[in-house]
Amino acid sequence: FLLGLTSGLLGQQRIATYYEQHTPEWTVRIYEGDPMNVREYHLKNGLTVITSTNKQQPRINTMIAVKTGSKNDPGDHTGLAHYLEHMLFLGTERYPDTKGYSDFMTQNGGDHNAYTWLDITNYMFKVNNDAYGAALDRFADFFKAPKLYPEYTEKERKEKYENNKKLLKFS
Image 1 (cartoon, rainbow, N blue to C red):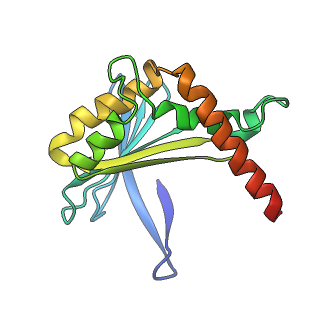
Image 2 (tube, one colour):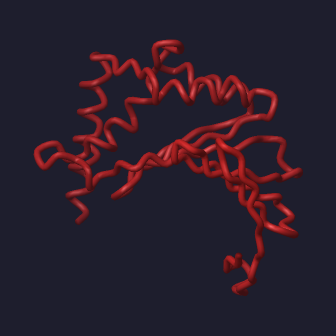
């Protein structure tokens, strides 16, 4: 198999070869001669996981792209995907503190962010290697059991409304 890779810094195109290994649960694509040691795992449940190595930074970066974005908003509730993106950071059943996730990331040399686009919402974080398991546990809980506190529901709605008004003034 061949894959064309483009280097944005060098403006050169290179051809990378890869091979695949298969198990009943996943298929992994391994790129030959890749200094970042990229592994592309395709899981049986449809999820794709991409890993790579960077020995200069002792942190792990993780992203998950959810196949829902602003184009999936109901016509009478525009901004719903972006609104939910913000609400997920405000506590879960197992980690109910609304600032707990952010505080955990800061205390462990990391940070987090998210964005909503037309067809996806992308959540990401990076954290020191030794805190990765605990960070991933908190991150996964966003998607399993978000709290969606009523008192923050209205606060976030108003904040999104004010942001949208500002954007409309500049268009």
